[in-house]
Image (cartoon, rainbow, N blue to C red):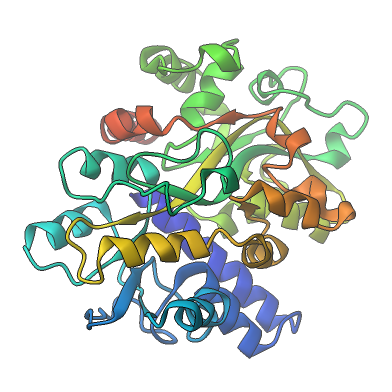
Length: 373
């Protein structure tokens, strides 16, 4: 789906910025990029990898990475099992996964997919059910292990605000984001819809427990009434950051990964809150009839539950680890940036995968028609 592709590209851009600034080496950049995405070669997004005997092909959203996924996951997995994991960055869109299955001879094994896409395809018989005798549910957060997908990382949609304007009276809830009288100034929201419907409803007084199923008529009525205050519907992370840096918006609903950077890069002139954030999961899934076999694929997913490996992506990109055991391993002064740290998690609402599985396409079409009207 579009929003997954956009977020993943943004993660690579953040790594590239660190490399350009000399904060990480080029080798470290390629290692971390591949740990995130599992690509085959630098600047070769889209190059397909064919399966071979005794190997697995992991398909992600591409990027500038060569060795990293091997260093973080592939090499340890090969040492333990003798199975090599090859990387393909051609992008596991829902349509591409379906085409792989329908070909009758898929060349992909494991995909970095939206959980709701995996669930939808799985219920059509196209994905392997997760084997929770192999994948350890105790190494996952409750509610984030699905029938056809297993969570691998988290990020959130949160409120970032201009602390030079609201430092003495900061926003404390989603209702404040939509209150332009108490908190004057323009706003910015996400173009691709995910998380915005929940925000619109919370801003209209709906409690966390009452959000799902989302009332689309109410959410879109709120959007239609409020959009005159939205200076930009951003489509990528850099854009969301720029809007806050140049003062165009006094508040924005942005990814927590970018919110952390804004707070750090502005020395606190831009801050963010976790209250009423929307937690979104990334996931791994396995194509039915994959050439490497379901058993090997499940073992690989289980190996990626290692909290030490998940800490790398938190350190570089502020992705919340899927394994809660990693929470206590994060340095104490950095835990406030973890979207799924217990204190942060309890203030937020988890994106409902089942609802998105059934409704995302139609909801996005209507959302975009209002945005563009």
